[in-house]
Amino acid sequence: MRISENKIEEIRITANIVDVISEYVQLRKRGKNYIGLCPFHSEKTPSFTVSEEKQMFNCFGCHKGGNVYKFLMEYEKISFIESVQELAQKYGINIELDEESSGRQSEQEILYDINTEAARYFSNNLLNHPETEIAREYFQKRKIKPQTLRSFGLGYAFPGWDHFVNYAQERKIDLERAIALGLIGQSTDGRLYDKFPGRIIFPIFSPNGRVVAFAGRIIENKENAAKYLNSPESLIYIKGRILYGLSHAKDEIRKLDKAILVEGYMDLISLHQSGIKNVVAVSGTALTEEQVQLLSRYTKNVVLLFDADTAGIKASMRSIELLLKKDMEIKIASLPAGEDPDSFVNNYGREKFEEVIKKAQNFLEYQSAYFESKGMFDDPSKTAEAIRELVKPVSIINDELKRSLLIKTIAKKFNLREKLLENELDKAIQSAGKQITNEERIKNKELIKKNVETKLQNDKKISPRILRLEKEIIKLLFEGNKEVVEYISSRIPIEDFSAEAHTKIAELVYNACNNNEEIIAGSLIEKINNEELQLFIRDLIFDKYSISRNWEDIYPGLPHEKILQKISVDTVKRYLVEKINYIIKINLKLIESTEDENERFELMKLISNLEKEKMKVKQETNLES
Ligand SMILES: [Zn+2]
Image (cartoon, rainbow, N blue to C red; front, side, top):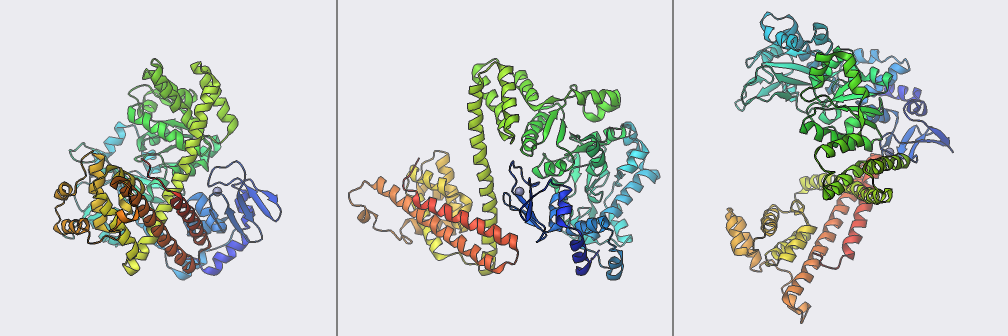
């Protein structure tokens, strides 16, 4: 569907950004603007600002910002068109006319339509086809009623290799797109085949109830066949951003102000059928930050109900941290051994299940019970470790009062001095603080990589100065000095070398060093099968590329090892500075060429971080081991 520019502008003007955002964020007036707690990152003092005058929002903390559409897209994780539609509907603006007059669909809409048609086909197979008794039996055995099958759009794909392909061809479904959506596969000789043959089909819905992907579960256990097969990510499906069942559960979650998080599709479907409808499933992936963000739109109260096996416990522990970071209230419910939510609710019914949920423990009780069961409190050395583990999640909580209450709980439970725990907590908070900058560093790194790659695609040339210094560093790696190799490897990760040959050589030497092998060029070179690369190393070692031939002259009287170390520090420093300058230059160019305010801002932030990093590099003087 295409909506005209005029219409988009009309809707934007009608929908006052302050009104719209006020429905999601508590805003109060400050001067000309409105401020509130940012919904996109956790904070205690408001840095989220809305300007009525400019009809824009901006967060000074996480740097998200834009107009009213951008807000809805970010907040509800929906597409631009969906955000326009949502506001049009809300303000009673008719956009149907445009739809008819233009007749053009967006790529997303076309993909949704293909998935919807496929879902109908699979569902029809399951419900109405005489030859699909096996699939219906499967659901009968699991006590799923026909009405539930319909409500979740469950289906079945025929065994064989081209049932769906034929159907798609008959219905003139675009095959390229069906391939992109993972409904159809294509072999190297060009033959098309069905991707889900012989599988039960679970359509996966967006929060708005559109089919974005499919999961196929095998009915008969076959060797070499995965139990579940999922659609690949596509324009309309990003795995970590979807919670299975949310479109069915969101109203009830809001109503009860509580969500139950389970692991599997069938768990969710059985619970829903028995009347417990505030359930979502992570299904397939570990819980992601984006899923938590999505869920936090509907409630802050989550009960984790994962399987009682080791994998389930691990998944719970991991999820706890993510949920705490988003200020969620977490409880953990446990089922008797050998039961999963699906079996439990079928065996014991809704009331018993609700008792289990009522008895859910807070995460500290849960974790300490787990450590207790592992015998960690019987052994003093392990007790210390257990306490550190218990304090770690507490450090993630933003609310200081809540933190100190939890610390008191732990202290009481294990008969410990509070002061001791507070010290542990301080340590954990500090290292959590470090983690945030690490995250930012990773983000910067990705951005840099992207920008440098784009630049290299355009002119295929790496700066000759960088290459020359890199060669010098590679040469130093072959000097047979372990400290030097350790130093260089700590400053320059393998993937940071610009030339492929350098990457390969660095990897070889770093590995040798890690394995405590002697770093001798002659033996290392044996491990290289590539003759060209061997030659390259030889040339390098025999001084062909050297720019610092007269080391001994520069530092007269110093022992060779010391000179080598000085040279290494100096060369690495020059290399890093050169590289940072190069990256800054690329990003400055990008700033000039971009029109996007947000992007420009991101780039400026990146450059300022790079300048800081450069200062840090320049101040480094010693070779530390
Ligand atoms: Zn923010």
